[in-house]
Image (cartoon, rainbow, N blue to C red; front, side, top):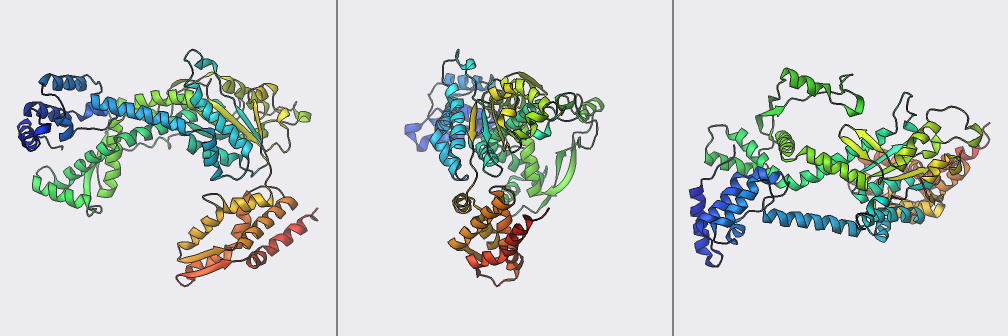
Length: 534
């Protein structure tokens, strides 16, 4: 239970504080009223998901009139933001605006360069597309609906960085993002997933994103509430203030994490195991929720768990109370319509060669036809409401080995107006991939072996030899781009990784060019023989 501070106690505390600081003094009754409203009404502030900003200095900076406090109190009662909250809301709006300003095309390219080698045209195209999202929101409102995003088609061999650009773009954009494989969908009317599921998945991702942002805003207040609930469970109903203070000190020192307490937790429902857990597919409601309301299912149950385990449970429960899901869904749908990004990978796999176009394939031309209205702009029905796809950015990518971009339906080609060709990787590109990115493969291997207290080193000649071998195998067998580096590097460090746990602590292992040649020599011989296999 939360401690309730009496108004008279607050008045005495404020009076002593005002006496010590006469230049900031405030009538005791007025300050007490302001502090009382902050103590007794945190829930009204949580409706706006803004942190509480009440302190002695805040209370002491007001006017001497009780009318000002009454106005603030009535604003809280009516659910309106107080002046402090208005400042916070304005700062949040400015921070979002600054975030948009930071996404300048050159800065986006610089961020992508930290993880992806080469492909400047593709990086420039996605950077401009991101910046145009922000620009559209700044133009006059009557013109805004007419500006549609310029969708992109990335064409390049496998392993050249198409999918990696999508992954990094998702983290960089801070916008609703979903990556799908075109081969997973079938034409409407056939067994399988239809393309509308892309937008439903995008909405779910947006809801999770907005919910995570809201949780960060109220995390500090929730942590105080969680601590209070844990102390209630530790001290019991008859606990004294002295024992509560002692437990609080030990709790903050981390000495109570393994202590077992009994708490009330929500009853877990496992809808996934029920074959008819949902009504009306993705747009329906879980049957478990319907039956639990109809039959009055018990909502909570008592469980024994450690303090560390209960903290996560209490935090989730308090987060659910502090966050209004209807507002989250509303904001998520709006964010999806304005800033959503859909990345469709392997789009070349759903287009048939011109010679075989007449063959019926539910995963080919039918999917292309279903994608047309989605990319052009239509209204998709989801279980959270209708969503308009007019301003969602679509990025398609494919290797186009057995088919050409011109084999796509003409209408779909017109809806992907920006064409970007990614180049195949050379030996020098593979060397740069091993050394330049922030999370390059060489660094990953060094850190993995370091956990065994063994220091792994690679000479520059060894790294160049790994790149040369990977490029040679790509030429002679099958070109899989940068993915070939995983195969070669794992072969090189295989014995080191196996024996590192038995080496002396602090040992150093150096990988040289000769070491690489010895380890991958058999791999190169097999490559030469593979050319003669019928």
